[in-house]
Length: 212
Image (cartoon, rainbow, N blue to C red):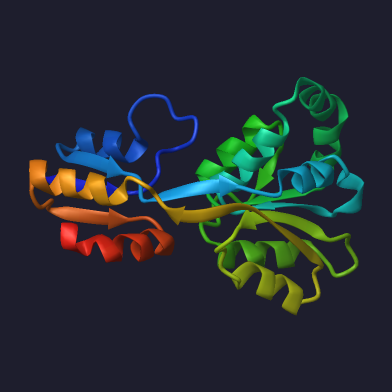
């Protein structure tokens, strides 16, 4: 069976994408076409906040891209050294919340200890946060994308848990999406299945449906 995966490659992943690998192990051929592209923004502001953990009650990550933005803030050697010597430990004395195992894995690579990797969705994560936090904490810091869903902010703020958000990446259609889709359907024909991985991916792909 031929499967078309409309998703972004895993950051820092060596070898085949896990979905391609797992499908191949069951005798299926999968092709991955990136749907979205990302532009990182507000990195100076993000860096300032990362190095002032005393002003926040914890961190929230709901996407690998937000973690990637943090990693970009640590590219300078002096920043990495300061992070490793003291800052990450200050954050680890607080709660570091994540959605999903992929995001949790990247958070661990920063030296942080994630909570909530089995939650799977922002809605479920919000319940975990509300169980653990009260209303008198310092604001939780939530670096996020420009088209984040409002489920988590609404749930936390609606229950009095202070939250500070910062948009650190913007999402747009991948510049090669139309070309890659046309090439795929011309060369390989119609797949048995097409898998979408985000509402944004569906939104950006539908205008290209003439390529199917």
